Image 1 (cartoon, rainbow, N blue to C red):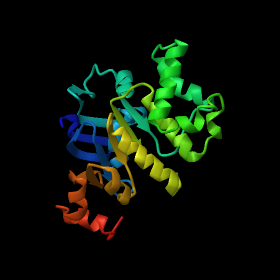
Image 2 (cartoon, rainbow, N blue to C red):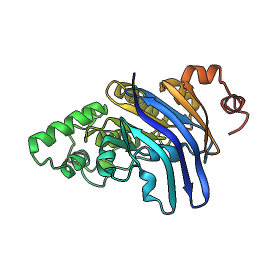
Image 3 (cartoon, rainbow, N blue to C red):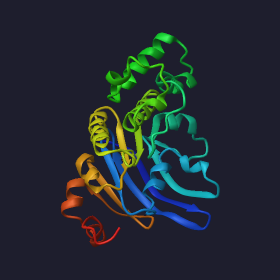
Length: 251
């Protein structure tokens, strides 16, 4: 498998505080990469560098490079709007828009100029099926998305991300607000989505990382301590700090 994401000596500062320190790693396409580590260690900050969401925060300075395929997304003429279409984001808490299920999914395609009703219908159906939600909602597409359960709302947000046909889907603790049954459904969905998309997930749940990811990166105090195949990192870590974290000695 070839790398689709590559970070090279990436540093990020909030004002004078350094939040990411010299991060370099490669992630393969159509794989699942998990970021683990204690709160405040930089894993979500690094995730947001992959589609430049940190640009929206005041007083942020970033140096280094991040390549999506062969394009450095931090070069001066980078097209951030197109980047965020190519690299979608699912957040910790479900955040459906306060309108219909249908219009949540059609929102992105409409922004990109698709107005034809038949095309929009096809995108809505395809996206909801991809997010394993179609069977539950296909007879209520005109209902307000906020009427869905928490787990359904999160799958709707995944479908909304898929509707603009990204290559990469970033997920920032997508199951932390969900019950165990909904969490299991989202995990099954993520494994299914890997067949078509590259998935990068931040999780506090180490068991989740072990269950679904191909590779795992362990972050601590803004540094990437270790990055390896998930099974190896959890069973035979190369760094004492990684071992201490995954065995519960801290964090």
